Image 1 (tube, rainbow, N blue to C red):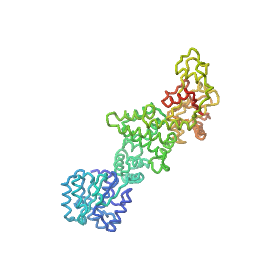
Image 2: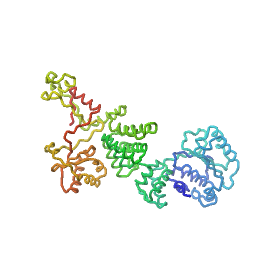
Image 3: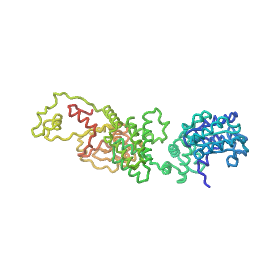
Length: 560
């Protein structure tokens, strides 16, 4: 019968245990020096090696020829414990044997000496599940057991144990296994199973396992069932994860306030049977990575991701403040908590993305704080506020006779010349303060209206975007979805992604992009932004209305 990998490759000695050297070293020294305790308590999260170390310890204390504190695995006792023929090692699940009657059976048994082994060892897993009466019955025996008895208690919830139990045991805290240690073990097991696995796939398995080696080997088992040549896509298919590119694209939609595109991505992922709750959790983890990059001095030592992914994450971090990132995580976390409680998971995720990409819809304190922070950043990036002299303002009496004497008309007259038509044009909304866009590259020196009027689609632009990957994948990703138009010696770019225009502002990056265009077309172009004729901006949010109020009060808001 087939044996799953986490059982087949369970460590046989202390040296095989991954990521718990602080525990295995102590246990080996106790065995070598024959300083054994009568009761041990192993605590830690699932899949970190508690039960494995308990079984190794049970064999080591009874082994006829231990090697450096570990069982030899070859003597009669080791083989008997391994195949279950020696009954002196008792493993009990406290979740199903939690009553006082079960503990009384153990108390009766400990009075008898072991049949073949040196010690009778009791391994009690999930010991926190015992009832209060069972704990009380175990106290005296646990404190002063017979010399031939050793108790090994294991639990994932040590806070549920009575203090009387804790004080009678030697406690060992198992840590979450580091991602690199899990990845190394996964690659070793895959090699032994005649399967090839890439470093990126092994690290992805380690990231999904979240410190639990057992979970990592279970996921590896599913990957091998799909293919013997395991890459990142295989791991994502086996774990039901969304491709990382969708995470970066969705986060880009949030940063650039592109609600329509975010909904398109959600629809596509839902059609591919991606779990919406898992996708929400992945988005939270993605923004957590951005938070660490923003706040930790050496984030590369903490984050488990490839170099290309780290570079893209750094690019996105440049357009966000720490307050923005924490706000995004808070909205997604609240949506994740509501999933499975009435409203569909997809609907909850869609509502969260709409709130993040249209922040005027969210009136919570956190949303307002994030928008105020964005407004402060906008001011720092060039928007200045100054008051005009009162004498320069036009009095209301100078308004044309035909104009209605409404409050709105009066304010308009104060800000616009008298020569204007009676019906004033609406003031255009300025850039939303939630995600202040970097200044776009300067418009071409010649008549821009003529350039835009003569612009024709540039069919080779997708090939240019693909060629940008040779510079940087993050740069190429910034121009995904953009369109280019040719107008004489100019190449005008239309993009909803403000990151693309920020890249064009840097002379070094702009020259690299021009070199790619030269390689594709054989022509040298000047680069600039494209604006569709008659293009209107979206409705202003409350922050824009606040700025408009300043203008209506005689305070000019200008962009330097």
